[in-house]
Length: 158
Image 1 (spheres, rainbow, N blue to C red):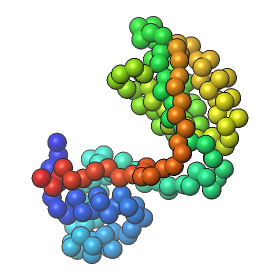
Image 2: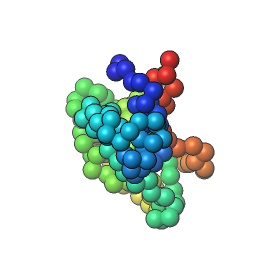
Image 3: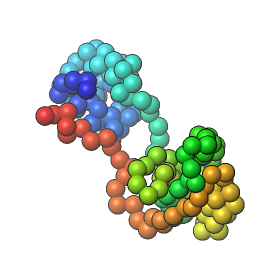
Image 4: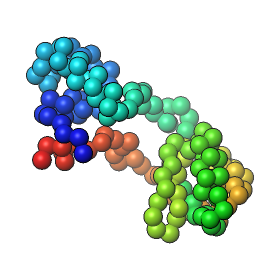
């Protein structure tokens, strides 16, 4: 695991909350001058620790009123089904995130759609019709309490 000093940990924490913060302000907040702060910032980007910057959108404000987590189980793993499924999911705009999982289901999908009717169409006419899909289990999000969130940094301070 890479080693981080207090300046870098503070920098990562601040940037997770506000990725548009100018380097001059960032430097002031972490207690460095601008040039060394900029060097550390560039090093964190070059090392792939800072992957990218993005705007966080309000799904409801743009009409995505239904948010669900969908667990997917495949029929088999020995015939290329996982690769086929992954390729199909990567093309589905409704799928915000997808993870492979241990346990009873093989994949966990985070999906956002405008309505329950569109959720039904997505599950019944697209997801369930993919080759190799055995069954799905859908869980409707009632309220988002926390997240999508930050990457925890507490373990770096130990």
